[in-house]
Length: 308
Image (cartoon, rainbow, N blue to C red):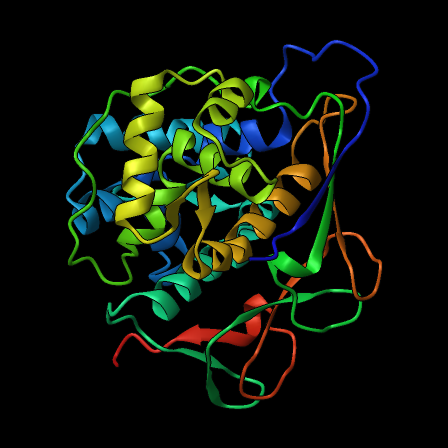
């Protein structure tokens, strides 16, 4: 099975101890509750502590810690309002608003690759339901993992991409939440899982190579590989593990994660992934394309039909 081409740049300096942009992004976003808080902010326009608490049934201590971190990393900002007494609401910053395409990509993968009922996405420009696909922002053609070429910087190591776990493991959201994407969040809502998948996109196949790349404990790696086989994302083979078509399709989510991380977060020298669209030769600039009209989907020009 052909896969994305990988070229590793020659090492030039020791890896810095600071996290790579992808590592920073996963420290922020690699948590199911964070993803659900963001999803509620976009889907239902929830802005208040009480709104998320009541909507998600999340404990107040867990919610408070997640909101504090989202404010600290510039995804939310607080604004005072008066409701009998002064209270605060959480508004998405521009950095936070730019995550909408990542969340739509998660939705799109879940809808295409599971039987889960999800609300349809309507493209207001053409008036039709859209099943978004990944496109190149330069040539506006559909882009897939196989159609890309990746050069990894000398310090873009997975050993420097992972941070110690910030939260104790808590029970995940209920599977009956509106718009919940359990399979996608099984991958993205856990930082080790996302790193395993990212390494696979970069050509890693063998158990020992995953372990060497990531500095991951054998028991943790065994668990993540088993989960991915159960999810139909990996299939065992003689050389180790290969991405299935379902796994390759998750490149849409990965592309938006990489683009957001490298645009919005501090980038230590040599820690980037330079992803090129082979057919046009341009660097990674992912967009979502409407399957109904072929146009680029913009945040203010789409809505979910929750009534459906």
